[in-house]
Amino acid sequence: MAPRIVLLHATPVAMAPIQAAFTERWPEAETVNLLDDGLSLDRAREPGPISEAMIARFVRLGRYGHDMGAAGILITCSAFGPAIDRLIETVPVPVLKPNEAMFREAIAQGERVGMLATFGPSVGTMTDEFEDFVHEAGRPARLRTILVDDAMARLRAGDAETHNRLVAARAPELAECDAIMLAHFSTSRAAEAVRAAVDVPVLTAPHAAVDRMRAMVEGGA
Image (tube, rainbow, N blue to C red; front, side, top):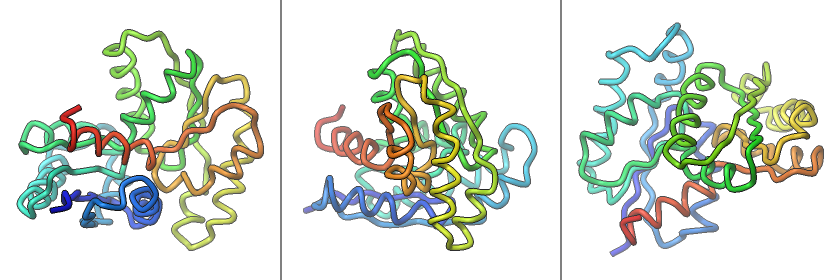
């Protein structure tokens, strides 16, 4: 029987990129989508660190995913790091943070890592996760992040072309980096445009996450 992978989404714009990555990299997996787009809306309105109430809400959704028979749970939104940590402690199946696999690829490219983000509340969480990952990996690396204003709003309004153009327009500011990460699953749509704007490796989260999830489920990696 194909392993069931539950995809936990906090915004609908993350759904198409991860589905495409599964189709390309692990078509045998049975993917099931859980979407609570109120999570991203409410997180954007919540100043400062994520609240205990939102962590509990996120964990309840993840537990529901486990109850569906998940062999693994892949989170597609990067603004909920502490909640994902709590979920990892709560369920007995692999739970993958959205950017962990991309971080692995980035630090393999060199010490200077850039990141293009479009969702402000995720930047602090992702920066903390990157620094923790670098510390655990024992590899020197530093992160420079650029928040692309208005790109997410354009994407949510259905204008992917403008979203991609806005993201690519800021990429040359990170041209001195050894690698550039596109912070969110939704941002991966801009990969082609960003690669046309710079000569350094441009990394996206969905494909790296699928490969890592498969290794965790099939091999216990």
